[in-house]
Image (cartoon, rainbow, N blue to C red; front, side, top):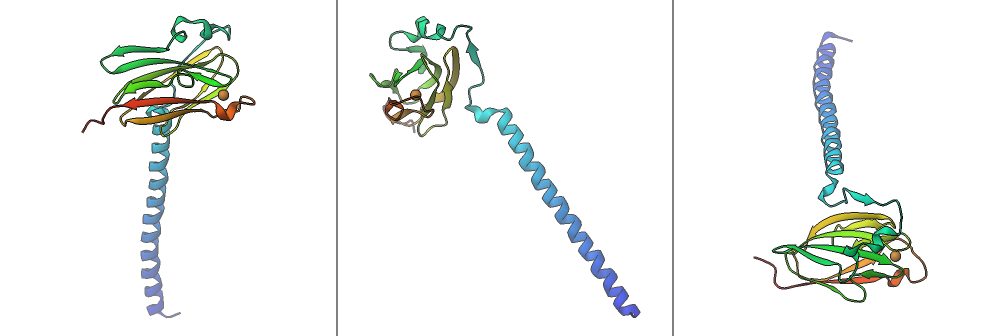
Length: 177
Ligand SMILES: [Cu+2]
């Protein structure tokens, strides 16, 4: 090797090393950003996952609570509501026998439980998805910004009529501009 080659090699390695360092830094930074974002989203539950649930010693208790009798709908503010959802084989109350009808913009807190076996409370087209468990009342809030018909489906196999366990939510009116 002559000295010209050595000088070239040296410059080449120095340049390569700079680029390698930069790319190591960039890829580590990308992993760090994604990791922090993932932790943040999980900790904050995407804003929609049920954060708390009330657990009863007797699994039959929620079904006997006054809130779960009748229509299951309570107005709690100008356009906010508490809805007490009971899943049973194979219906949602309210929803299946009588659609749940609310005005657009309604802010709804769903209190969800089951009167028999495990059911999955999912409202299609929204991010609402929680398990209806006997003895447990989970809750999740959602604002219906778009009018239309929403379907509550059961997404946890619960027996012969599972696929027909469908409820309706009708959001009436016009969306606010
Ligand atoms: Cu079910």
